[in-house]
Image (tube, rainbow, N blue to C red; front, side, top):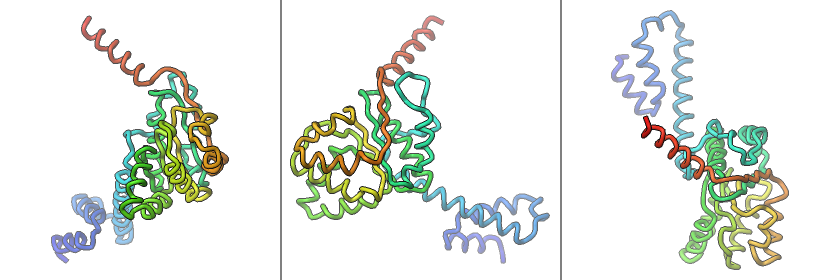
Length: 255
């Protein structure tokens, strides 16, 4: 078969990785030393990698992570109470496989959102579905969904996400309706999926922040008993980076 029609057929079959690998083989005269099965194996390997990459890009796009963060880039030099051993354990994504949760707390600028997005990024790379959302926005969308008939559909979508990242937890008082919505979300996920909760408030203050004691008990009962805690402290990372940047600018001006 002529090369051009063959390439067209591979494209039609959406075997993009195989088509690219075939082009590479044709340009490489040393490939003739390999057997037919070896060359075919290389084509299949390229196609498999291509498809894995496409799926990973799709997962990352769907996750809508707030920050382009990676566990490999986490800064452990600043004294903010970050346990490297724990982060490396979480980076294995075993907690997602075991349907456990992670609670990241600390002051503004401590790097809470970055850490959550880094873990979300790693989970995407490990093949898990991930979604990042600010809790106030999620509860707002559920409220709108209740009015336009999408409520059950929204709940079902979040119940299927393997790793849900809830940022800005307890940043503002909740209404009774919002507390019930939050309970529904966590009830669907309890023991089945993993959730990362990001909050400025320490875990021990969540009960009071949630308001109504009965629903607060029910919500936290489905969240706190199977998770890891990361309590950050210290100065704002953004502030430190800003000071470092100003220092570098000043040194450049002196030179």
